[in-house]
Image (cartoon, rainbow, N blue to C red):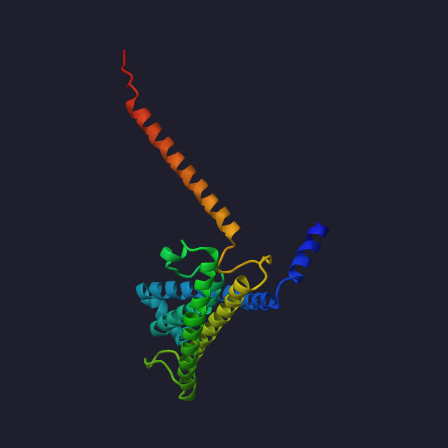
Amino acid sequence: MANESTVHDAERRDLPIAIYISDGLRAFVDFVGKWACWLILPLILVTVFDVTARKMVWIQIWLVENLGRIFESTLLQELEWHFHTALFALVLGYGYIYNTHVRVDLVREHLSFRKKAWLELIGLTFFLLPYCAIVIYFAYIYAYDSWAIHEISASQVGLTHRWIIKSVLVFGLGVAVISGIAVWLQVAIVLWGPKDVRFPLMTLEWPDEETKIEGKERIKLEELEQATWDAETETLRKASSPVGTAD
């Protein structure tokens, strides 16, 4: 065990500095995303309570009169929107570093490893990073203006301090940019770095890992086909077997 740890540490020391930077950026994005995922709980609770209170109005009236106007329907609905917005914004980068975002793989899946890396690099350089930077710029102005004028909800009984949720959008997009930079550094090392260096990839898979995954998927498909064939055979056997007659 000690020898394996020593070898692993030696391999880590041989990695380019860009990989250490990428790992640090990924750790930050991972931290934000894991904590942001917990926003799903208040989102569900507020939504369930709001729906229930509409059916049992007397409960809502009692809560508003005794505990405050936070239980009013308008405030609850706006809280739902805000929790949903925060959840979406803060996990954008988290989804990207784990490669769970939506992809159109009709072309990409048939490309070689280096072509996939080039496609990822081009997408990051000319689309993801510039687009997020532009949106962050306008979102910042959007949030700052909201803070400057003390913006409140369009509804007279809605939430105040609208700049808070708008600032969350800016922060979430910033985290998405950080995730893009982390992946960009990895892809750059894949394309131009040492050929014998291996490290965990975020949006790509090393060629030998792709082969293992394809092999596992092929085995699962064969097992599924065999199970389907056995079930159909058993059904036909039972259907064709003679039915016993009473004496």
